[in-house]
Length: 265
Image (cartoon, rainbow, N blue to C red; front, side, top):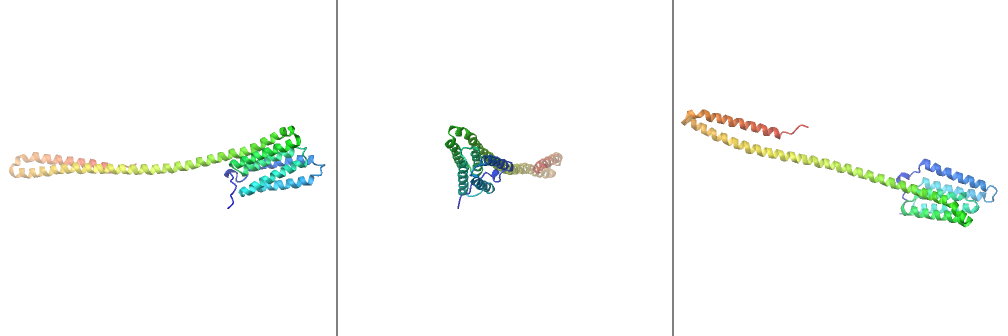
């Protein structure tokens, strides 16, 4: 399976205004060079080479997911065509600006190290082609185009970093939301467990305290029965004690039961 060219998601479809500016830039270069070649015998080769050049560039813009092999071939073919166009009139330098359009293609179509390798190749050929024809003057004239190539590549590299940072932030946001939901579930479980433990504690206290009070009531009831037959005069205080014990047991049960009831939010 052939490897696909990796294109930043944000640039999978060329931005209209950026692409419009590139085509406008190309039209300016084409018209200026064509006017300079008006009396030349190379008019038709110039037109055909530019037609092939713009077809290759447009195809790459429309189909950014072409295999890497084809993107490399397209870039190389454009490089050869630009050198050929410039060689038709070596004394004229406007065609050298076509390397900036190739820089746009490289920045758009490639990522990582391959992007900068092609940028270096374009910058070298851009400078060398003018130096070969014009010497030191050619080097001076090529610097602006070299800067344009690097700016195009850097533009896409920076935007790719921004897109990757945005995607990383989105992933982190999703992970934080999932973690927050898990913490909420965990907190709810801890709260339920704490409430259950508190109810169990109150239930034990209810059982222990009421059992002790009921045991006291039983003993005092038995004592009252014995006093009723043997010493009726001592019975009223015993009955009063039983009444107090019963009331205290009732109050304590009501208090603990109220704590066992779930609290309304």
